[in-house]
Amino acid sequence: MIFDISQLRIEVIKKFDGNINYYNPSHFNGRTIFRRESKFEDKLLVSDVVDDQDNVILQHVSDDNLLLSYEDARFVNENEISLCCCRRYKDNLNKIINVEYKKYNLLTKEFTHFKTQNAHFEKHWQFYEDKIIYHVNPYTILDNNENVIFKKQINWTPWIEKYGNPGLSTNIFNVDGKKYILFHSYNNKNGINLKYHCGLLLLDDDLNPFAYTIDSLFPSFDGYDVLNYKSYFNWKRTISLACPTIVDVVFPMNVTVDDDNVTMYAGINDFICGRIKIEKNLFIESVNKAPYILI
Image (cartoon, rainbow, N blue to C red; front, side, top):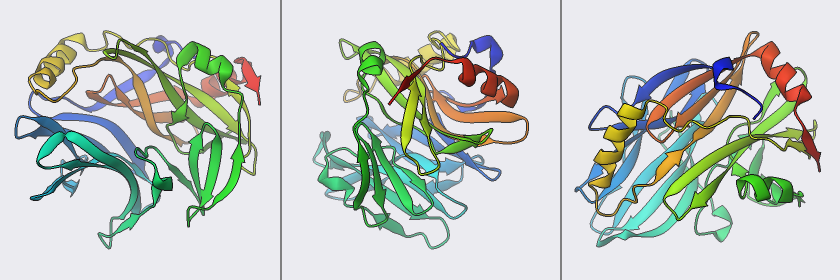
């Protein structure tokens, strides 16, 4: 692993409170938003987007036909967030129609609806200036009209053999003149025990990927705040349609960089909103000496 837990300053911003769950935060210019999870008709969990005062930015929608749940929102800029919209049939809540990707304007309260490449599940796009980082396997960049303007097949085999298939996690961020983006993956044991991993993908100035870390950034978070996790797990398992997965995960949503720290806003074990701070010099030293796979 590239970092030891003892090297990290982990601040819990919000977490499961016994009735409502919070995780997967995003931060931009002093503002933090969260995924807030609650029970719907005691049948499944739905998600809203809230701020740090628990003010609702986007609330799940239910009508006679559909149930819409808003998940994993990230700041794009001062006025826009991106998010996943999970759509279910109201008369069959166990049936997911699809997961669409959208942008939402915080000022006009309007959505930008994407075609999402006509795929059934779309998650974790990253917006960078006038481009969309669509996927890392293959590494794909879209323009604002969803035209593919760059695609590159990366040799992900060494990572996949250790950690599973990679997907996007965070925004592009700059440290010491280098561009990075975090990706994630997980190993699945019988569909119940999920262990997540995340690595660094290095990009050149044209956003072309050229290397990635062969090791995961973090060690195991299994047992982190174990008493509260048991409470969360028992709360979740009472819902008949929810799969009570046992997770070991740190899931970075976005990264901010200042003069002193590289800060990752991340979900930890699906019930904690964490702010993980790494001293900037430690980050530079650690990632510079880490082993990489050249693409």
